[in-house]
Length: 227
Image (cartoon, rainbow, N blue to C red; front, side, top):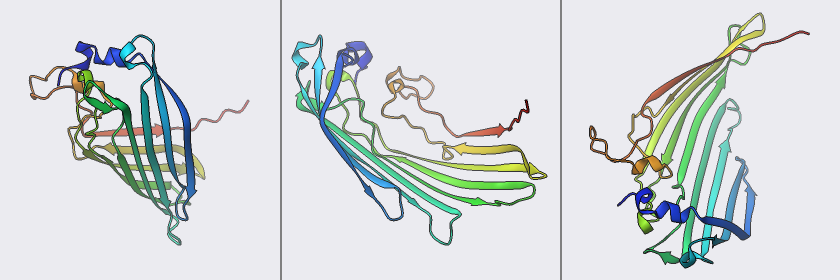
């Protein structure tokens, strides 16, 4: 698939303005979670300069579901789940494709964490967690005008640890340590335009990939000023 930046596919679509009408969404409370939100809308595109696309209708719908579980009596345990899905289609195909461009893939984020040592003498408010971030394949790419290509699925796993260090009941600093993409997965996000750059002569793969395995350290020092 060619580069949309070269043949004008991106520039033509950049002239689109979206005006959403008759949208609606509703939220459903969940006993053990935050909420379930579902939305739907019909969108009309208004094109200033592209006559062949003027007045084209778009159908956009999706859902976002969130479930946050704190099982009693294990109140220190946090089990969070978020799933999001968006789908959009043109009312009529453009250059052989009826999919809307720049639509993210379905995504499922699951995290499991625990809070400990709320009254520690040296280390306090210890938090330990692990997160799973699964991005489904996006096969509904807008292939018209060589604008997009499909993106395969990928699964990222990360961990995080944070704690307050105290002395005489006063917090000296907070230390946070994170590890991302522990599986060192080579992946490209569907919304990244870097995936369409030139082929890397070293790897033989097209485009720029996202960051591999990485670790981060952060120290927060509280500052108190008496005036």
